[in-house]
Length: 85
Image (cartoon, rainbow, N blue to C red; front, side, top):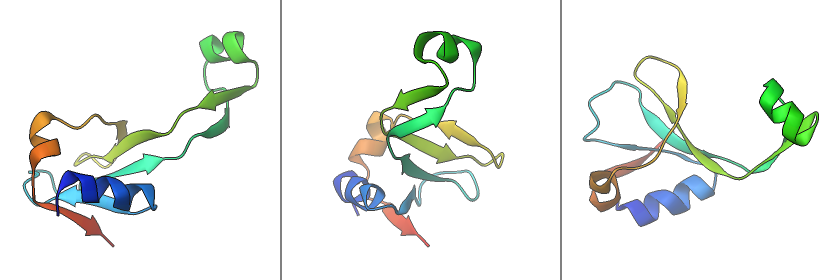
């Protein structure tokens, strides 16, 4: 599927991945916006104990952790997106 379809799937709560990604077990998903407890003193100083977050992309990496993610130009033009169960 294309990236537009991958976005719609991710917005619906699905994990999406590219068959062209080299890392094993990698996938992207959308973290919903919401109010979350402050994790740093910087956030606490600005917002208090609860911080308002916008939705954002996250990536489960090949190193088995989570990172924020921004798609590359190649990712946005790729046709090898798939939904991961």
